[in-house]
Amino acid sequence: MNGILTQYLMRSILTVTALVLLVLLALVGLFEFIGELDDTQGEYQTAQVVLYTVLRLPQLAFEMLPIAALIGSLLALGALASNSEIIVMRAAGLSVTRLAGMVGVTGLAMLMVTGLLGEFIGPPLDYFARNMRLELRSDQADGRLGQDAWARDGNKFLHFERVSLDYDFGSIYLFRFDESNRLQSIARAENSGVDDAGNWILQNFHETRFVDDGVQVVESSRAIENFDIDPGVLGISLVKPQSLSGRGLLSYVAYLKRNSLDASRYETELWYRVARTVTVIVMPLLALAFVFGSLRTGGAGARLMIGVVIGLAYYLAAEMLANSGQVFNLNPALIAWLPSGLLVVVTLFALNRVR
Image (cartoon, rainbow, N blue to C red; front, side, top):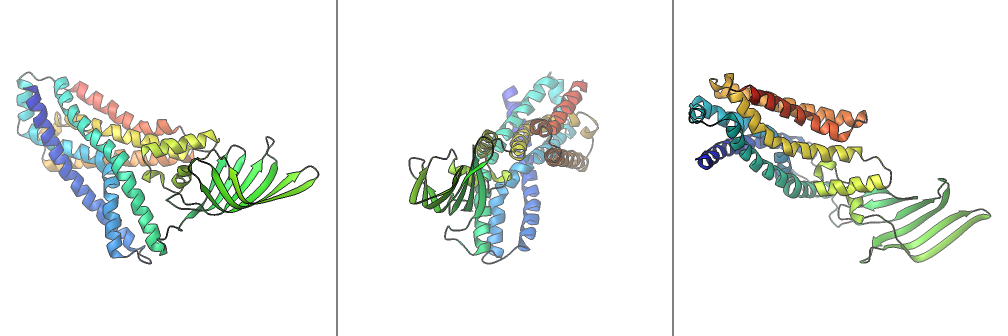
């Protein structure tokens, strides 16, 4: 019997949540499309804007899922409460704890979908969409499109004049410092790349070394260096944190910390993403607590309104804390988990009051 009820609750919540998510994506996608129309340039025209918007939808779905889960759960469970179905379940001996466990299974299913979108589907498509837009707006699709980037390897600082999203490297400047942070040498290579063994190949290499008795100049048509830098890290440095997978964020955070660089921006996004994913499982339980109250006799409009208000409050609080945490140098994990933690406390308190 419990298995049948669990499937019934899951089907009801997931169906309404999917509909709510489609409505939210339609609205957000429309705003995204309208905003991009103002940035058409080169070959990036209306047809390409439509493709860009469609490719961005999985990432937008990942961002909207906590709100959609709350609104969908409120509407679905509220409808069951209005039809006295939940009352019948309680009268049949089903405790609030058992009922919350059944609803939690639905939240767990939505958590798995959210994790799949946020790690394997959304970021790669968003990455591709932004790369496509960059190439089309610049009328360069030959692989030479790129930006400059800085990297650090211990006491060596590197400036790449062209790094593309495909990890293509152009000329490079190399600055070496000693343990006392005194400049030892300045070097430049006209082109750079990485061979199959992981060695950095520098072509037309020119280095000026500063020694005690003067200056030495070293020139070579081909030099080999062993920088402890993953080429993928340079490509990651050009991508917005929102477009990176969790694995990419972890890799880049490790690189930044290894070289004593500020990683707060990427740590914040990493923890924020984890907290947002886990929050999806809390939303159906929060909705369950509300339908036992005054919303049981309210209409769909009242349930929709309370869902929108709570969802927007959570979204705005999470965004505000994430941005202010970087400004005031707050702990990334703390500010990312604070809104979700408050939701958990409110949910437990509300469920505990149900008799």
